[in-house]
Image: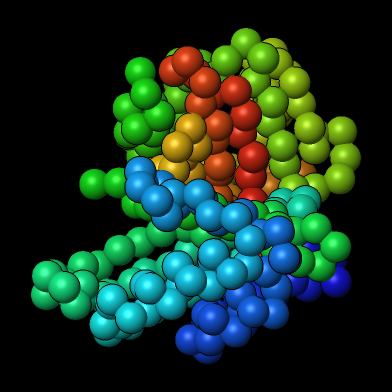
Length: 120
Length: 120
C-alpha cells in the first residue's frame, strides 16, 4: 500500500472511532511515537510501548467526542487533525483539545507518529 | 526565539494575511521547501528559490480568501492549517484548498517547510 492508501484507510478507521484498530493494523513493529510533552511517554519505541500508552490513555480519560479530519498527504507522510472532548478521570477536568497527528509510512506501515498540539 | 515563540509570531503574520513577511522574517538562508507534487517546484533549496516560488504563486493566483489556523507545536516543529479559496489565472479555475504547513525550526529560523494537501 502506498502512503495515500494507508492514509485513506487509517483516516477511515479513526473517523469510525476505531483508533486502536488503526494502530493495530498499521503500526510497524519498530513504531516510534513522539508526544509534545516532557516525561516518560514523550518518546516511545515499539508496538508494545505504544499500545501500552493507548491503553493507559483510554483507561484514564472519558471520551465525550473524538472527531478526525483529513488526511493530508505529502510524499511518505500524512497528517490527521483531531478534535477531542475528554475528561481526565483522576481530576475530573474536562478538556477540548485539538491536535495534529503526523505519520510517516514505510512499506505500508506507520514507522513514526508525532503529535502536534494546538497552542493557546 | 524558541519554537513556540516562532510559531506564535509566524502564525500571527499569516493570520493577518502577511504570508510573505512571515517568510522574509523567519526563513533561514538554507530553507528547504517541500511541496506534495511532482515537478520542478517539488523541492526547493534556499531563500531565493522559495521567494521565487511565492512570487510565481501570487502572480498566477487570485486569492479570494486565505484563513490560517493554529499553530500546533511539538519540539522543534510547528504546523499551521490553511484554507485557501483561489482562482488560477491561467485557467480561470476556482479552487478551495486545505493544507497543512509543517515547519522545522532551528536557532529561531525555519529551516524546512513541508506542505501536506487535503485528499479527497
